[in-house]
Length: 122
Length: 140
Image (cartoon, rainbow over all chains, first blue to last red; front, side, top):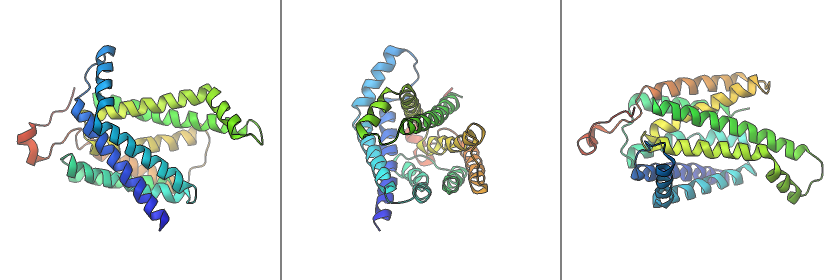
């Protein structure tokens, strides 16, 4: 039960982090320049974005929960279980970021999720 | 094209960073028995390979976040999973690791999955929001 709760935390915090970071990056706008001064200005705006900061915090929570669960569970169980995050994040992107996820993209994402699970098995 | 270049660089940085960090940390821990945590920490900080690996992983995150400023998260996330396949290939060719049939099968599934996702376009706006957001455009 403890393992299930921690894996759910790894997946949900990681997916929320990805969604918030995407939201923050969208607010700052598309990066089109390669000039250092303009990039530095963008970097300041990204670092100041509340969504981006919360996203980084969620990513950190996910990472430390991942480390914690590895202290008692096998990597070959934890990584396949957390590969569910591909599907959860894609669902979140459709729901919260209003991305259009076509059948083709869903199929590809499910194959990636299954592939990552298989690749992590011993 | 811009998306492909940025994501390929991100995947290469992530894989190289992971391999370099793993090797460096193995070397640090194998440099002597009965080391204190403090000594391990000092050796880790002093290792140039640890800094290089960390810099590459920071580079990966910067490229990943940059791609998210113009491309869909539901595109970028599965696309970067190609790094798993690259890791298996690097382990096989450079570290001479034995790869089980299950891992090869997983690599093939990821390869096909990424191929399908990449055919779905970089930015696909929900048709219900096209009027609000304007038509989806692929960056040059």
